[in-house]
Every structure is written in C-alpha cells, then in structure tokens.
Image (cartoon, rainbow, N blue to C red; front, side, top):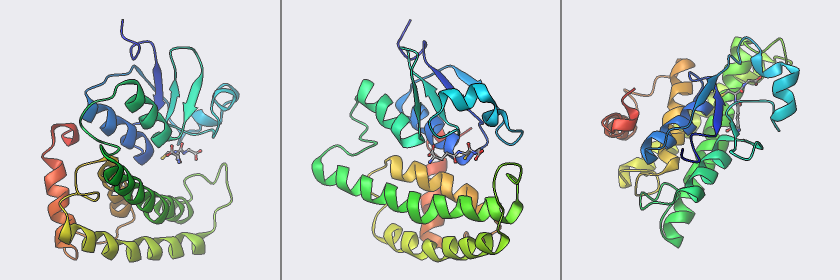
Length: 208
Ligand SMILES: N[C@@H](CCC(=O)N[C@@H](CS)C(=O)NCC(=O)O)C(=O)O
C-alpha cells in the first residue's frame, strides 16, 4: 500500500479550490482516496469537520499519520515534496521557482480570492454562514474583470504563465471557472487567454 492510499482528501469536487488539487494530482499521476462532502449544504460547518480543519474549508488532506493539512497550495506542496519529479509544477530552477510563485500568487490574490468574494456576495450562497454584501460582490466582479488584461498580455509573450506549464496555470484554469460562473465575457475579448485555454484543455489531466 502506497503512502498516498492511506491518506484521505476531503473535497467538494465542483469547487475551484478542490479543482486545483485534483488537477495537480492528475498532472503528477497520483491518486488519493477522496471523501466527497457538500460544502454548499454545510457539511464543512459540522463540529466534526471544524475540529479537524484549520480553516474550516475544503480541500482538506488527512495525512497518513492522522494529522491534517488545509489550503490547496499547501496540500500540493506537501505532495510535491513527498513525490518529487521533473515536471516542475512549482518550478525546477531558481528563476522558474520565482516565476511560478509570482504568477501563482498573482492569480490567487488578484483573481481567485477576488472572484470568490464576487461570487459569494452576489449569489449569497453562503448566507447561512457569513454576512453578504452585494455591493462588495459587484465591485469584486469589476476588479476580477480588470485583472484579465494582465493575463492576456502575459500570454501574448509566453505559452504558459511562468513560461513553462506550472501550478500557476492550474490556478488560472480554476479562476476562469469563477469568471465564467460570474458571466464575465472573456473568450471573445482575450484571444491569447483563449488559446492558452485550448492548449490546457488538450492535456489529459484537464479532460474530465
Ligand atoms: N484558500 C483556500 C480556499 C478554500 C475555500 O474557500 N474553499 C471553499 C470552496 S472553493 C469552501 O470550502 N467553502 C465553504 C465555506 O466557505 O464555508 C484554499 O486554497 O484551499
């Protein structure tokens, strides 16, 4: 039995954060047993889940020693450290590592997090657990849209965000799901982003 088989990944597969870990694992060819929970129905609010999760959210990885890791990128980094390869998903030399970190952070902070705030505050899907401020949602949606030209310009000069395929592209793929869910039109406006999307869609890991 491999060490991965004795771990457990708690996730809600349709969510962007779960998607980041799932795509990362597929790219690395690693399988971890999954326990599917439904965050929209509040499974993560239950006392048992809150007791084992540092941030109360998915994804959550139970390690083979029985302890737990939250945060999608922390989980990916842990798996990568346990199972190093030459795929360079976090970068393979100092410059590449820096570029991957830079683009992944930018997509996370200026894209994903802003998009989450837009989606949560416009739809109110989590009004059972947080204050909902529609104006904040609308402002966040505008800011998310305003980040797209930065990505478009980068993808005019490079095939992938960090030059080579990396976790930053996985994060951007998840971010675009949020962009789409918010009804922000991007396909017609951003040809480089669209070509990048088509490039990723051809990768086996992305063909769900
Ligand atoms: N920064 C965290 C974000 C985790 C997150 O926001 N997960 C969402 C699903 S995408 C969740 O569990 N939402 C349920 C809730 O907020 O109660 C990560 O990357 O893991």
